[in-house]
Image (tube, rainbow, N blue to C red; front, side, top):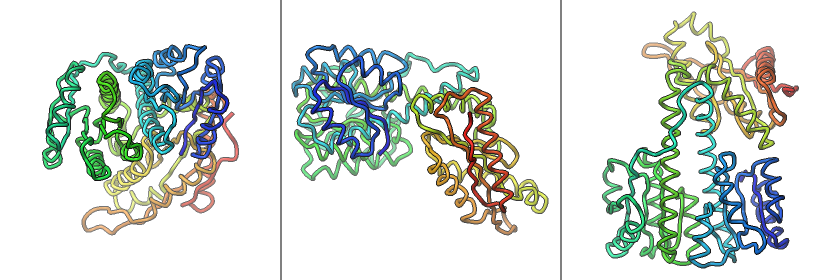
Length: 463
């Protein structure tokens, strides 16, 4: 598991216990006891997630959470409140202050880690969308609108009439938009239009160890039309293991039925805001950038998009103190493909290579076509060893199976050479980023000179 965690707790024993658990889960961990120390850690290197005890009798920790969520530079940091009293009032106060979840002590370790994984998935997705949104604004496109002009669509899925009606009434009493009651089997058997922004899933009456809810979440996440909807699962009281599994399967939130009406409504509103924000960011990327910054043949980003995006990636690397890798990839003997089989065949090879690269990279990675047969891949949070492994994997997937050139033409074996440069811990300006790209180019030339179908690493960092 990866991610940088900040623990804020006045009690040293609490900090030590949590830190040991986080280190065992392979997180990078900072721990401190005061708000001042926490602010210094956040300024130095933004954490991905904060575990904070809001019960401090001296400092206003609730105010601290509000300030973090209201500051655009720290709003995306996930916050879990640990240690508050397990009362409706305390839980609501923590969520109202900006905490993404509340886990009173004693903390169930499986549920804590599952909740952290869920929040980090959301944070990484938002980070990727914000990074691309920032690039679009740097290119002069319109900023995503702040006010949501769409009416949220909320659906309740339940196999049980009594509990389903009760949950629908509970949500309708506090939400400004109506909650539509849908039969679970109907949703699974037919497409739902329009697709809900939020599915509230009633698992309160199931006595099968959560298996029905598990299948439903997996099904909703696997369908193209519902995979981006947010999922809010309501479970019976005191089922932390089922809640942990629900979150790991892709639910955005999971709570017990015994929470207060106010807390349930607050959580539902937060999930709707999250969904609509992501929708707006996706719209900005899709509509504002597509025509201007994509290669019409392969659909990949082009050089115009790459330059400002790398600048933002470099700044993120400096702040997080995590390196990023730049790869230059070039098709071996591409000219001979065009000369022998024609440019239409060459285009088929370019399109298939673009597809293979795109399908084998993370959402946050950048893949672009920057020349005739030359591609670039940029990977955040990637050190020298990881960069080499990733580059060799991409090289192998190109040569792993032949390329189809069309009817009545032979299949063609194609190889690709890769050059890699890694850097980003220091502040990089435009010239230094260009230098880093040049180092990857030099490594690419070395891979070509070594016989092609090779990976070569730059031995110099951009400076």
